[in-house]
Every structure is written in structure tokens, then in C-alpha cells.
Image 1 (tube, rainbow, N blue to C red):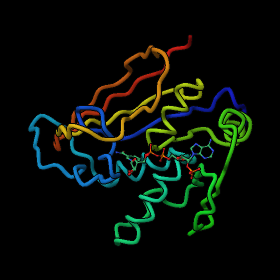
Image 2: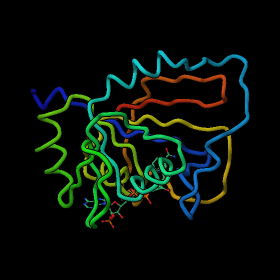
Image 3: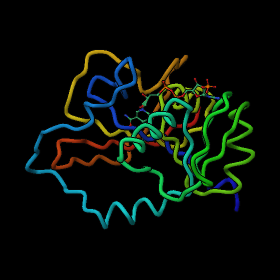
Amino acid sequence: MDSTHSCVTVHMAASLDGFIARKDGRVDWLETADEYAGGDTLDAAYIEAFLKTIDCYVMGSRTYQTALNFEAQGLGWAYGDKPTFVLTSRDLPRTRDTVEFHCGDLVQFVNGQLRPRFHSIWVVGGGVVSGACLRLGLADEIRYSILPILIGDGIAFFYQLDRDIALHLTEVKAYRSGMVELRYAVRGP
Ligand SMILES: NC(=O)c1ccc[n+]([C@@H]2O[C@H](COP(=O)([O-])OP(=O)(O)OC[C@H]3O[C@@H](n4cnc5c(N)ncnc54)[C@H](OP(=O)(O)O)[C@@H]3O)[C@@H](O)[C@H]2O)c1
């Protein structure tokens, strides 16, 4: 595959005040009870078709550990049978064949190993990894799903950004659940 046609998307859901988890890592606030009458409904067939367009996932080790906890609680594995690359320097349990661990230079990994193999690369958190992707100029687009809640404090969507990053708004969608999805292209320097 021609690596110039790959796309790295950073996607997470966040509170309106910009947090992806509470300080202790809990995401209990993701279930909200709002209803916006003018919003779209996400039906299962649409979600299934959309997920098919994603070729692989990349995540930090703490996000992986949250995903394993969800699975242990009977909530399933959110990443289907897609290759899932977990960034870690630790020796973590590998629960399925689709999971691969990686440690080290993120630029070399994304540009040198993932872009030539995959078209649609989704970075699904957490804040440390999304911050690194933006700082290192690896992200092509950001999808930011804002939930109708304020939580006051927590883990920020982007950790340790050291400069402004200009964005171009490409899509806005509001859902019946009160969630608003913002999609931005990352503008070049
Ligand atoms: N709201 C949402 O949509 C959403 C989405 C995803 C996650 N979350 C939440 O966010 C929280 C986790 O976010 P976080 O920012 O604390 O952590 P994170 O980004 O998930 O993971 C950070 C860890 O990944 C490893 N890592 C990162 N870059 C690496 C590299 N280049 N090479 C090797 N290892 C690397 C390091 O851990 P090691 O010590 O293992 O090396 C680092 O401490 C969880 O509570 C999760 O539930 C929320």
C-alpha cells in the first residue's frame, strides 16, 4: 500500500470540559441520560459498517488495561478482530492473537511500520498516546465525541502539548443521546 494514502485518526470520547477519564481512570460518566430531539440515532447496522472501515487500532497500555477490565466485566472487546497495537514497556498479558505489543520510537512505528500496511489507522487513546501523536505530527485527523457532562477534573484528551496545533473543522454531527461528534483535519505546519 502507498503510505501517502494512509490516515491516522485520533478518536476518543470526552466530557465537555475535555477529560477522557477521571483521575483514577474511571469512565463511569460515559453513560449519560440526555436526549436531544433533533439528533441522529446510531443504528447497529451503521456502526457495524463504519467499524469495517477501520484497519487497525493503536492504544496506550493503560487504555489496554481498561479494555481488559471491561472484558472481564462481561462488556466485550471493543476492537473486533482488527489488529490492535498496544504501546508498552511492560510485559502485559496478551489475551488474543490480534494484539501486538510495541515499545519505542512512535514515529518510526507509525510511519515506518503501520502506514505502509494499513489505510485507516485509529489511535484510540489514552491522553498520553494522543498527546504524543499530535506533538510528533503523526495525526491526520481528530474525532472528538463530546458527551453531555462536566466532570471537573481528570485525564486530559491531549497530554503535554507543547505548541498550538491548527485544525480544520470537517464535520459536525449531533446525536439523540446528546453526544456531539466533531471531526477535524490536522493542518500542516
Ligand atoms: N474516553 C475515552 O474515549 C477513552 C479512550 C481511551 C482511554 N480512556 C481512558 O484513558 C485512561 C488512560 O489514558 P492515559 O493517558 O493515562 O494512558 P494511555 O495513553 O492509555 O497509556 C500510556 C502508557 O502507554 C505506554 N506508552 C506510551 N507510549 C509508548 C511508547 N512509545 N513506547 C512504549 N510504551 C508507551 C506507557 O506505559 P508503560 O508503563 O506500559 O510503558 C504509558 O504510560 C484510562 O483510564 C482509559 O479508560 C478513555
